[in-house]
Image (tube, rainbow, N blue to C red; front, side, top):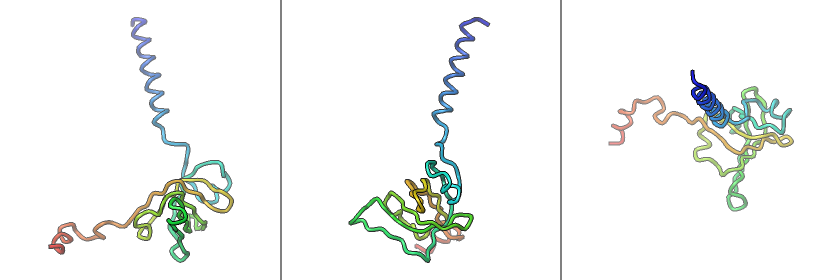
Length: 134
């Protein structure tokens, strides 16, 4: 092999390595509220369900980017959540929630939320739903 071929291969390998580092997901990992509380400076993904027995609070006339609710993580631990975004559409229908954020004191402050909502057809075939609309 010529020296130029070796140099080109090394340059391509370095470029691929740089792309993999840049394209790698963020430094956040999945955890529960307990783990997030022990590492308040680290961003985590916390999976759980909204506690529908407790009130939610969203007052857009005061602050459009603050929605407060209570969530129970997969270990059964409940925490107050402050979402620094507006209230998501169909929040009440969500079956499961993934929060992305950090613990601040006793509350979890989320910068983003992902929701798993029920199926659009709720077990029905799409054709049956289309026929009902006709």
